[in-house]
Amino acid sequence: MVTKTENNTTSSSKKDATKNMNQNSLKTEPQSGNDDMKTSPLHKFFVDALKDIYYAEDAILNALEKMEEAATTEELKDAFEDHKLQTKKHISRLEKVFKLIDETPEKKECKAIVGIIEEGQEIIKSTEEGSMTRDVGLIIAAQKVEHYEIATYGGLAQLAITMGHDKAADLLERTLQEEEDTDLLLTDIAETSININAEQED
Image (cartoon, rainbow, N blue to C red):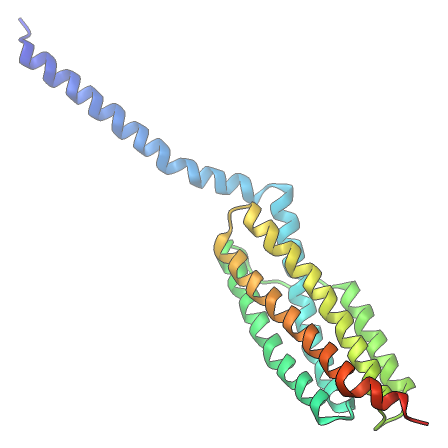
């Protein structure tokens, strides 16, 4: 004969077992979700875009070296020097973003930035060394780079938020803000001195 106490004990054990099974099931669900996310078209697009801007930042770093050498005014040279240091920081941040989403940092050729940089090199070739006109052209070329980066980082930050990559989104948004600040600085340099001086050149 089974006593009432034994029945209660058996029922309690079954409840505990069921509870443990549910908890274990909950623990494995996020991992399954992550696996699904990594094979989703959106995740693949996100990673591909990260590879694109990772390549772009490295190419920009090299281009800034040439732009700094070609610049006429110390103010613009200093701006390009600061942007080089900033770009190194952005590359490091991108590597952290790759790590946060469990991906290996890789570069994919960014044809857009290659074209923008080539245009900048043409400006250097077609303008007179030591002229304000060259600096005007260099600022425009640099701002084209900035606007590409602003568009890219803005889109990537929003995608990271959508996919729940909050820490990655924070890093991308910090870079976005810095790119916007650099763009404003270049505009300020152009409007307060370089454009005016270039207009007075023979």
